[in-house]
Length: 297
Image (cartoon, rainbow, N blue to C red):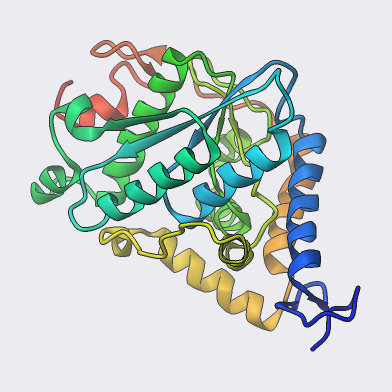
């Protein structure tokens, strides 16, 4: 099939928009949506320092590449990559090498931190105890390091590579749980005491299109899946939405758009924020989740 905007062959058919796009127009489409969301939600301001959470997977690699491409001529902005090595044997080493390769190519400062150095235990060691679900452990500990390190680096924002699939899954999960507080915390620009604000420039880009963008730009992207990802409840939600998307193209965009509509009526999260009695990090309880999971409180 030919591209609908020029005579060149199409590299993708967007079923939700009924559009065939060539390489050039597909890349333009992805970057247009990202620029639109950055402006719409005022994700990046003048003179800010942005930390990009760089795992080495396709989403974070594409995120860093695009932010560098858009803002490389802006001397007032500073972009720094931060990678967290959880200590997952036969998985993280590969993605870490990709992260190092890209930051070297783009000449972007790159900080690497690990579970082992921070908590004295790797992810593999923690999972062996079988006391908590792997994804719960990883999510809480990664968030702890990411927030603390970003504060220490003087960051104004943390950019994370959540794509349209991630956002639609999280929205549906919170709907099903009736968790209005978590929904409110998803609002662009939502600020919690002690937490560095997060931005999601890829929030309107489907996961498959993120992967294709990376491939077309020759990014060193790993398609490996975390060996512990099978434990996640999110996998069930992903299957539900993907099945529905096949029958009703645009479902993921509808979930995101519907959330944006009702978000105007959502109140800020009602959760009171404390300082953890053990480590001093922000927490909704007297002892934070990190310290509880590590048996510190």
